[in-house]
Amino acid sequence: MKDREILNREIEIRLLDTMTDLIRVVDKDNRVVYYNHAMEQALDKLEGAEEGGEQGDGHADFRMTARALGSGENIQRETYIGETYYSVKTNPIRSNTGEVIGAIEVFRDKSLEKRLQIELIEKNRALMDEQMNAASIQRALLPQRGYDRFFFMDYFYIPAELLSGDFFDIIEIDEDRTAIYIADAVGHGFASSMATLFISQTMRNMDPDILADPTVAMMELVHRFRDLNLPAEMYFTMFLGVFSKKQRKFTYANAGHDCPPLLKRKNHVRLLMNSGFPVTPLVEASFYECRTAYLQKGDELLFYTDGITECRNKRGEQYGVGALRALFSEIGEEPLAEIRGALRDFMYEDPADDMTCVYVKMV
Image (cartoon, rainbow, N blue to C red; front, top):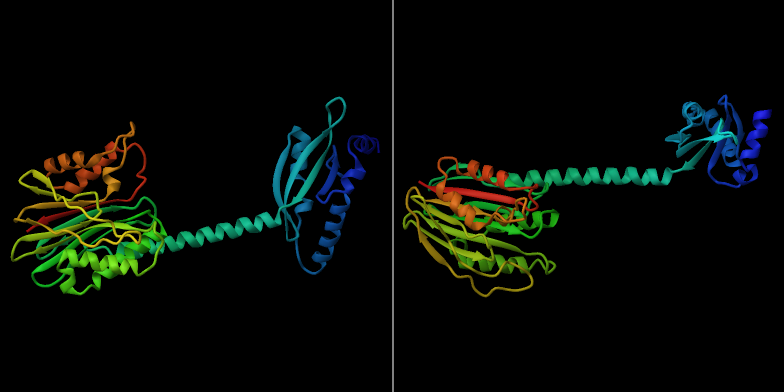
């Protein structure tokens, strides 16, 4: 009884009995010498539940108290008593001379926090699954690599996150004409990926006579996007071109896409410059200017988004259109592999924006 008398002097029994936390005290031999009222009620309730077939033995685990008694350290763990989840703190009790003479354990009900944590994990897992499925759909909508009737096409497509705001496509209009575009929607999450889906489906289902004229096609896209009544901060940029095999003519319009495609002929590279408003609910463009370039067999085109030109090195410098243009003029048989290698060497951190590059060679 001497140990218990010492313990009674070290703790305020009445104070502990008023607490809603479950508290127990053990002596130096790891034998329980005290339960507060809350602990007694929980154990009484548990005893009744166990008679009905339920199990719960978190209160019967004395390993942490033994450890605290042996080492004198404070320990925290988690356990269940019945169906209730507790965070348990075990602290040694010392005498005036510093000798460990027992331990006190406080069981705090964390069931609500645990349920919320589990719900949050499950929702995050469900959201991740949805994003992965959406990313698979987004990639499935991209055109096939390889040879077409008029050209060879290859690309790399690197979303900054699971979903991308970048998109591109090649659409056969008729036996003579083919449309090609690259688009960049603001952001790189669900909203931007839905914008790319809108672009893909709208362009794929556009009347061929409209699609054949980049100016008319761009205006049609603007009108349909505005009909969605989306927030003003939702917008995208696009470069759209139509190639005529018979005329070897490439007619193009630009809706705010500040990454002018590169046209390479015998190692000389020039920019396909053009300008126009982005596609946005905020401002309705009234006209998109068309320009023309004549393409020969062997000419190469490079389409890209600003995730490439705006990536940064350790000094915070952007890669820029100039560096991409110089690189494109020098590289040979594996242009995309060399561009990706150059970007990896240049970038200091993982890309903060989607990176898309589409290579086309006329045949």
